Length: 154
Image (tube, rainbow, N blue to C red; front, side, top):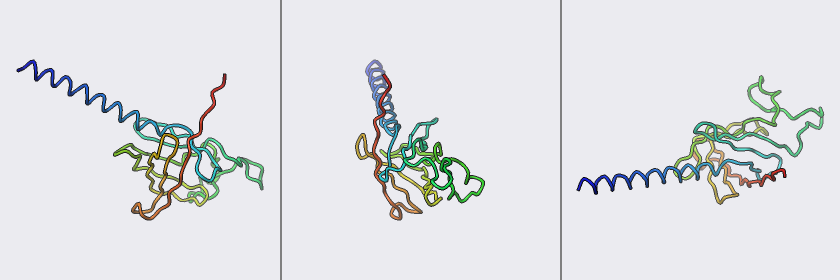
């Protein structure tokens, strides 16, 4: 009987380990370069420690037309951050993967200088539903982001 108990425990541990690895792989599917529906920017999402973050890596219009200098975060409510370049700016912060979605994070909108609570759901391998909201999830807006295929240099 002891042998069967040990064997059962062994299989249980293997299954638990495989489940954990599967969940981790699914969570990491968020990483990559994504384009919001407006097409004005591209955001690279990375995993840092156990959370996910996204920064602007490309802008359709990288320079301010009036100054010909790189665009900065001119709408930031913190005046000391208004000269920070938008390229490289981290707009997605602190997401954790739970219950099949990335939650407990925030999204910053440089067009109005506001930060919103946010949840990210993967519609399919190449499509994200990004929902920014205030308070409860029903008061917000959802945007669809598409994954970009990065071409590797030969």
